[in-house]
Every structure is written in structure tokens, then in C-alpha cells.
Image 1 (cartoon, rainbow over the protein chains, first blue to last red):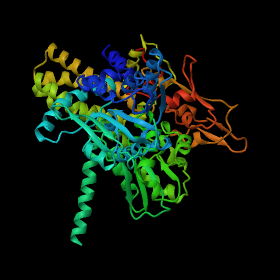
Image 2 (tube, chains in turn brown, yellow; image 1 turned 135 degrees about the horizontal axis):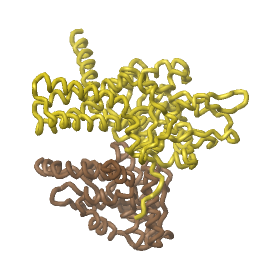
Image 3 (tube, rainbow over the protein chains, first blue to last red; image 1 turned 180 degrees about the horizontal axis):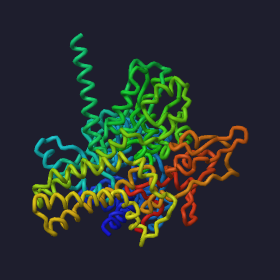
Image 4 (cartoon, each protein chain N blue to C red; image 1 turned 120 degrees about the vertical axis):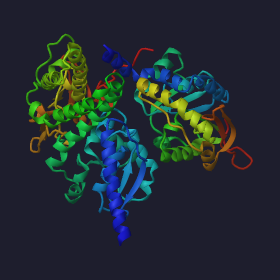
Length: 227
Length: 395
């Protein structure tokens, strides 16, 4: 019987992703996402990198922005599609199964906003550099990069506490969803290296979760494109 | 000179230690760094190989490629080995596209040919890689040690290079992989309840695992792979399998009884406790073994009762199935331009042929007659319990 229950849990892993991530992030994710989405204005073109089950995508679309959500997991996208249909947001949202390595197909200066929740921490080193370079390319001048993600605290004490808290959470989450997240190192520095300007960085008390807004600088004095 | 020798010995020692530790912990993911590795002095026309980021695999591939000037790309498979990761959806088209695009390899070589391990064919679609990146996928040998011969043979694989075998050495590795974590867990439990028995329990688990895996070719012949279980429900079919472990269990119980009599400590409680504990182990090992061997088709995994069906109307004899089949099921009739399946009995339902067929001429059929179309097999991978997640859960 216990085997059977275990199978049921594992069977529905993608469906349980939301719940698993909520445990892993101790419920703070919703608020962070709300605050990120507050930067989005009506009618803007938004790209959500690693949309997962659509938390950020749906919030952005409900502000009447045009959102493109990309993810490598087709099952996640199916869950988002279902939510999109239920909420009648189909005209605002386009979903696409693609990874960051395919961002080359997106046009130069075509987005007002690029956002990403808990995705950068899943990327490899090479992917992260590549993504930041592509984000710089596809953002309109003055466009924003919005990130919510897990980072490694710089303070050694906080790093230790963080590890102790995370360890059991990682195991629980892995059992439920077979996913986990890794923290990113030096995210603000890497974003600046890519040529974006950090507008604001907010860390939680433990310094293990970052909420970051960066701007693509205007070229010269004038902006070339209009919104 | 002495320094060099010391270096060689150190490297060799490190390789041996890595192999031992990671064999014992084989059941767990062990990620290594992803990206580009240069081997020897590669130039603009040197071959490009790609593998997963399971640490042990990367070490072994590097060793096999020694002496060949080439590039090795390590793609992100979440620290899981090639076959499991590709079949379980942890090593996908996206991971291959990503390492080709983001590692910088495109600036280093003139050609666009990449050799992938054949077992990745259950999850990576060569046509998608070609379309999205321009790189042509060549399905390399199953085992890294065959790569030098594969290169010499101008990228043509012999039958031996395509086939997954389950030789003694690998069976011992598998036995260690199961015995190690289980003996540790069992030791911790027995330490609290039954302190004298920690060593016997651990030893017993090792011996049992080794016996099962070493004798595998013998008793796997007795297993009736055609029979559908007539048990209660599909979850009780595990007892079908119990024959060999149950015999071993009986032998063990006999020795326990003799032991009890010899040290004049023979009580029914003693026998009962040991009977129960060892029976649980037997059961656990039976369940695990069913999921870990490429031969036995159990009722617990419905996927293993699937049959690959060849649609002769659609087949054009492209021969991809023959190239990627790890059990040598296919033969391609070059004159009639059609594939046949003389070795269908050996099929392990990995699905590689279905994923790769350019004409969608292959599909799975379940014992109930349900059809799993190529699109489904490509899109939905197996989870940890060997189930294909076809439906989306109601939210």
C-alpha cells in the first residue's frame, strides 16, 4: 500500500511542482512575484524565461501585457496552458517549448521586460553567461530585467544557517517533485558584466533569496524605439 | 622523471578511488561540471563527442578518449547517467542544444558533426538537434571503451558496439550499488534493536545482492517473460519473481535455525524476528531488481509489457532503429528498403527506435491494445517508478 501511495505522489510530479516549490521557498514567492510584476505596464511585451507552471506569466498577463512564456518542460507548459484557458488570458499569452540556448531566434530589441523566477539557479555556468548576453540583446533600450531567485549568502554564518534550513527542505521537495534548485553565485556582478545597470536589489534577512531589477541602458541620450 | 611517475600513479589512484566510491553510491546523482573539455591538442577538424554530466561517466569517457585529439562536451543531465537520464526526461534535446550553443564549440571547429552516446537515443531526437542547431548527430557506441575503434572505423558501428550486455563486472557493480545503501540503512536499524546482528545483517545483504546479480544469466532463464501475472492486482505480481530470492531466504532461515540450536538460543521469537527481517529484505531486493535489470518484464512496470510494432506501410528502411537498438532487435533489408524485427523477443522497451524513426513507422502497443504514438513516446518520459506521465493532473 505504501508503495502505491509513493507511486501516486511521484506520478503526479509536474502537477505538484507548485506545492513543492512553495515548501522550498517557505511561501515567500507569491509576494516577491507581485512586487516584481508591479514594474510591468499595460501593453508591454514581456518574456518569461523558464515560466514553469506560469506563476509570473499569469500575473504579468493579468496586467494586460503581452507575455511570451518559455520553458524546456512540455508538461509544465501543459499545466500553464490549462490555467491560461481557465482564466481567459489566451489572447495575452504565447507559450513556447524552448530553452535559453534558443533565445537567438528572438529579435533584437523586441522586449520591454524580461523576467525570470527560480530559473537562473537551474542554469549551468555557460547557460547563465549566454542568457545574460541574449537578454541584453533582446531588451529594448530602457527595458527591464526582473529576477527572483535563490542566491548563496556571502556571510559565512548565514551560509551555514541557510544550508541547515535548506537541506531537509531540498529532500522533501525532491521526493515530491523530483526537482530542486541550486543557488546562484555573484548574480548582481554577472548582470553588470553583461552590460545591464542594477536598479534595485532586495535580499531577505538570510540573504539567500534575491529580488533584482536591472535596466538595459538607453543608447546615447535618446531612446531609438517607441513603445 | 620521478615526479612524472608519481603524477601517473596519483592519477591512477584517484581514478580507482573515484570508481569505487561512485560505484557504491551509484544509485544517486553525482553531477560534474558541464561545458567543454579539450582532450589532447584538438584542431579545427577534430571530432566532437558529447556525454552526460554523471561524474563517473565523464571520468570514464575522458579515460577512453585518452590519446585522441578531440573535444568533449558535457551536457547537463542533472548528474544522472546517460540511459536513465535520457529515458527519464532529465537529459533532453534542450540540454544538447544548450551545450552546443553555449559552450563555444561552434567557434572552435569547422565541421558540425557531434557523436552522442547511443543510449541517449531514448531522449534526444537527432532531427530536432539538426533543425535547431545545424549539428548532425552521429550515434556512437554504447560503451566509451569502443570509441577509439568507432573512430578508426570511420563512424561505423559494429554489431558489438551497439549492444548492451550485462557482463559479470557490471553485474557486480550493480550488486554493490544495491547492497551498499541497503546494508547501511539496515545496520543503522539493527544497531538500535538487535546490536549483535549488525555485522551479520550487513554481510547477508551483500551476499544476497551478489548472489542475485552474479547468478543473473542462470536464473533469468527461468523467468517466464511471456506470462502475464495472475495475481490479485498488478502490484502483487512481485511474488512471481520471488522464487530465487525465496529459495535463498529459505537457506538463510535454515542456517539461522542451526545457529540458534548450536548456541542454544533457539526460541520462536528469535526465529520469528529473523524471519520477518530477512523476508522484508528479500522483498525489497526483489522489487529493486525488477526495476534495475534489462531482462525481466514485470507486471509492476506496465511499460515493460509494451510491444514495439512496426508499421510496414510507413517503413522506408532508413535503418535508424538498427543503429540505436541496444538489444539488436532489428535487421534492415537494404534491397526491399524495409526493417524487420527478428530479435523482437530481446526488446527491453527502451523506445529509442520509436523516438528516432524519421517516418514514425514504429509505436508501442500495450497488452490491452492501447497505442502509444511516437509523438507521445518522444514527449513523455518515464518517471522514477518507470511510469510514463501521459496525463496532466487535474488542478
